[in-house]
Length: 156
Ligand SMILES: [Zn+2]
View 1 (cartoon, helix red, strand yellow):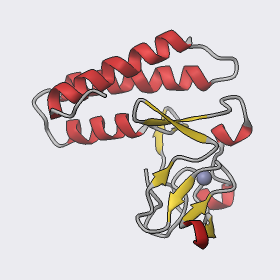
View 2 (cartoon, rainbow, N blue to C red):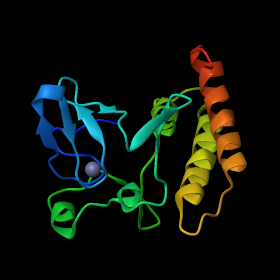
View 3 (spheres, rainbow, N blue to C red):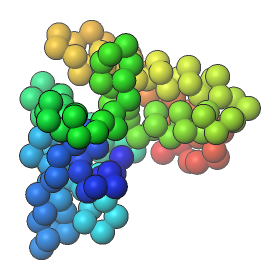
């Protein structure tokens, strides 16, 4: 995930604060850091890397479910809408869908595993939580294994 073409946080659709000395932008909505150089989302105190993905350090804190304001939405939306609800996909799921959308021979399999992982992610971070940590990591492992199997990327 990276800042959009207007330099806005893709989740909150607002401009993050620049911290030039540390080379980062900080979004006050979702507490994500983005690299000033590349615009890419990077790990910080609020979003920690787990198995190559960034997950919230405080899953039940408000920043995890940060959404664009109504005004920001009117200016343009970049989030995926599924059944009228905004869904933030993980980086892995985004890559898998991109590969499937590109017409990969195993597109159906890619979409199935990515969607199952998305559903588990939502359930894991929902209040109340509807997906256990074991199930959540199980879906992550299955999605990741398929991705590595197809791309040849190392599993770890
Ligand atoms: Zn944000």
